[in-house]
Image (cartoon, rainbow, N blue to C red; front, top):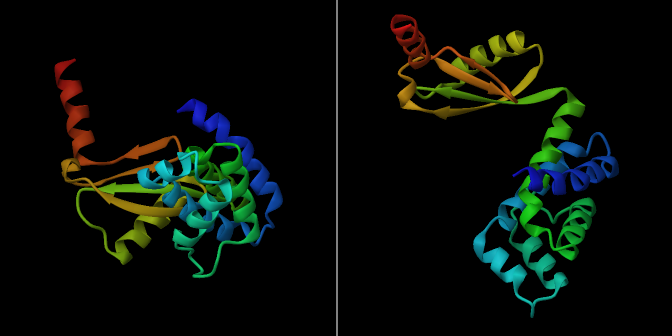
Length: 181
């Protein structure tokens, strides 16, 4: 995986330099939509066909991808896609999208957070948890919830490489370690 990250970084950084501050979030959504299509096995098989030109791959990819705005992809997204296809790096597009999103988040002072919970969290509970975690981590968070029943109760919050585990399962593991030590 480190190799994919190494290949993707220059593309993401170049796209960041080419994007305007206000347009970066919209561009990140477009690149993410294109990356979802590029990750499809049938699309990769089509793109790897030697009889298919890079222009045809570009046309198919842009027509199949569902843009958040509903319009065609922006010129910056098309330019990135053209460069990726011409260099035979279509398989790296999902990693480029992830790294570009991280750069956009860093520029805007937002971090992505995954809140793992044993039970579904409604909107008001999520707002409370998010506010507490923003205070705890000292930055604005964009949160998404993932349900993991094996946590038994509580939450586990992952922000980048930081993990805050307040789940009952983690507490039981701590008690087990203390009792067996």
